Length: 456
Image 1 (cartoon, rainbow, N blue to C red):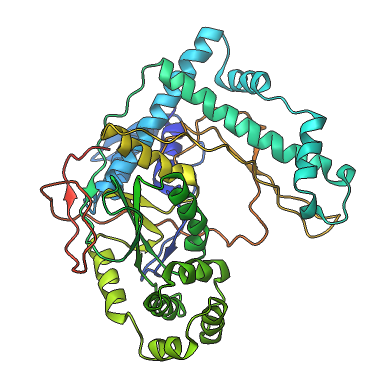
Image 2 (image 1 turned 180 degrees about the vertical axis):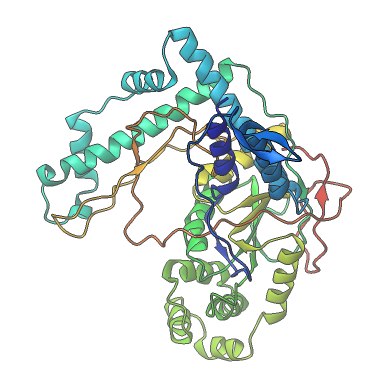
């Protein structure tokens, strides 16, 4: 394996964000790692130690070892698992692609291009149907004015899906298995819950009403509850990041006050819908909108209703190693940040399968509408997409080397989407626990404990 590719892979494994999340500011920061430049070969002499030559290959091997040690120096079992799992997916994808390319008598790039051409078809009728279905998004612009943009968007989405399916098929044909075990955490019970108390799956979310990534996750939670009405019990726990979101705690207290009048979840979802409009005046208007007793609500907010419960949530999150939001735990398995319903659905489906329970059918996928530029002359910015290892690959896994130079553009985010932020680090290492089961809902928090060797 070429040394520059090997080091570049390490840069991807260690540097690519695992998920989008809000995070408290760190006291220290360093420059972002850049991909290493192509330099001398592995046999070239990099220097001398005690009069003996040290080759570039020996130096690179030492660097890789140090990178791994740096990535796992805090002895965080989740972080180590995610790093190894991404590396395993990457290795499996590379080897499967190389084997398929050798069998076809092609190089990897040519094989991928040919497979995409065979698997992706887009007609003028597809473009017209999409335009008619989302006509209101384009204002007065005609089909002719936006056809090229829609075609690029749809083609990119189809190519991305085709790439995922092709890589997954190669992995299955190769007999790939991931036997690594993700650590589980015994998350302290408590919070506000919805769903059957005896549901086989408990999903706990630590979140912040002012966090833009938590706002994005709220529709995912709603979809999850619709998809798993009897299988999932969802518990929401407040984790306001006071240093960066000064309105989050007040919003959390207001939601608790709404809960005293039986409207917690209505107020909860409304807060995320309206965020970041969370001033005291905004909160009062939302109470009025939901028909709450305004005097009672105002008095509760003035007295910081639910303050102790929120503090208990924060403590439970800290004990579980939560450092950013949103942070999810599915039967104790940490899922840091959620960008789509499929990310958390895969974890839920795996847990149901392990319990021998039926998995609900996957809902029909809806193709997202392209972001509409502000004016006729504005252009969309395509984002290159490299083929992921597989649909079940951990978020943020590195791309498969050898992707076609003209890789399809990813779906452009809506214009109103917040900018990307640093990834939520996985939960910190904690003490072993005797059992991996998620804790039932109860008011008293308890320390989070990872379960050694628990199933994925």
